[in-house]
Image (cartoon, rainbow, N blue to C red; front, side):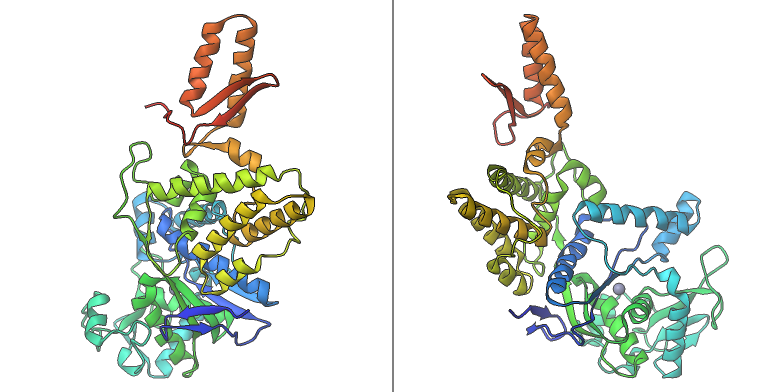
Length: 469
Ligand SMILES: [Zn+2]
């Protein structure tokens, strides 16, 4: 089965063929670590992490790098505001980023290069660009001369005028051309800096990715990916730097870009507020539902991020886990279960996750109808294998059902404790206390039922009973 990917460089769907099938290389632009990340910044790690997993199924060696930008003016500003060294800010938010991505089911990349750990490589690349006539030093700055690279603008397909407008270029006396961009800039004493042939300074953002990609993956890589907002100027500049530093050899063979999240359609929710930080969202919703929501649209399309989307994703997982709960008596070796061909076909079609998810829903329907142990085991295996590749459905279905209600985390232990107290109250013939506990549970979104086998409880997510006002 061919893997088809849409290449931004050619605006075509292309069959993916790696330069070296034994060493497939992918670089994804990672976060600038000065704050908690926005849910929109989680889309690239989720979708391109899925691509890395898909590549690993097909090729023996995959090297996936996702960088950390840990020197930047926004980091400097945050450190100054807090009165701490930049390392305190970058350390804190790098850890938070890893934790938040982990909560969304994103596996760590193979390589996580940090910009500050690659200053010698950055300086060396800038020296090469000066030597080749593609860059020049002026007043403590080093600038890339865009006029020296005729292909400049090919990725974003912009005219020079559009590029100048899009980059909001700074007109500076030391620039030969307003479109020239910074590779190195001087640092005053109160800002982080490194000694260089051009004086004490710090790198520009674009050169960091070019240098880290070369240092960790090599001159020509298979896939370079990131958000569509990075196409220009960041990726355009990366191509210019890397191609010129590599004597004209190709930098990245396939360029993939994800669409952005759209918050305009978002209804303000009184209980949740307009929450958009992953750090907060994963504490208010089942993180797996957030992951499903991010995968619910094709990665190249914009995604309307609304409370309704999250709610719908929770309900979808409810149904899928309910199916798995019905199959709880069937033993399957989930790690060995074959991936359904229909799901693989959808993902090989430029990561068509909406079709893959529709296939999973169809498989769940078949699983509910399956008769006999062999058929039930086969359907359960398919469901778990498809879920594993997408980073879904790997929880205990009973734990899933007990964990959440109405988008708020509910403590199953606390529910059980209340049910026990109610039983004690009834045994003591304190019916007022027992009824009060029933009301308390209802307000938590928990419905209870007295049966001959004891008390059963379920979540009233879709019921009419809301939680406390
Ligand atoms: Zn980058």
